[in-house]
Image (cartoon, rainbow, N blue to C red):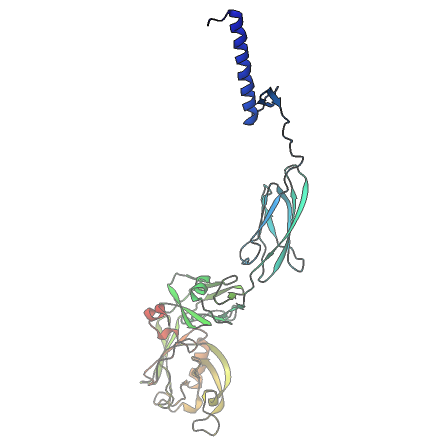
Length: 406
């Protein structure tokens, strides 16, 4: 059929109108705005629909405190804000003391910088603004871990207790609770030396660990021990109680070599022989321990009582008397001291109860020159080696044995 020009134009307009209506309807369905028409195509043509209503307020800011519980006090408290910003954050302990912290410039993150404690619940208050700048406030709490016990690391020698130490002085850390995770404890203990000397830890017991170098310290060494124990899980619910630091200086290398075969003791200062003394070591029934001994205490005089090691009043060999110029070299009752009563045997016969006996003048010289950490090496005494656990028996072990551990 051939349409006339007028009928053709009418047909074309109808088709174009239908296309426009469909396109506008699809625009509404996919969310495209039309400045003139909003509707959907129905059987009767384009049906207007209402525009969706805009929200009358911004969403409320969401505040997160991380973590809310079981926080290790070495980990900062972190406050984050979504759908808004923080204007102020206040964190307080149960006594109301504020914990210092820093708010990021964008107002979305706050991080504590102040110290935290174990087993403590902190109150967190956050003043916020939503996206429309409307104010708000959120309260929360955060609780730190509660250890079953806290282990305190004691140092030997104690900080500032001596002006300097000898080349044989090991570093000693003693805990007041057993440590089951020794690796964690060692990781928290760091030793730096100048000049650098390689060293290692050795556990004497579950509560005591020692550090020494492969050889005696070099004279003039500075040693820094840091125990970063706070927050450290030491096993079985025990955590480190605090952080501590020990700084030591090693003085000249004073080493005495006491020989039970010659009944003499040679004195070396930084490797040079400076004096030789007559001595008397332990008698056959009370032989002195062999091996390196380290001076652990120094007293002008003490009362020596054999009952402290089991020989009491009424038993053969009992004694209790005041002795002068005493330098302890083991925890088994061995000292270097003045012994005027055995001057006749010194240089000839070993008659002591295990100590190194000296004439009064020699004892005074020794007392004046030797101190904490200096070394007395005993040979040919007939006694057993000094046990590694006897105060400072550390040097009885070879370096390989020391590194292997107990």
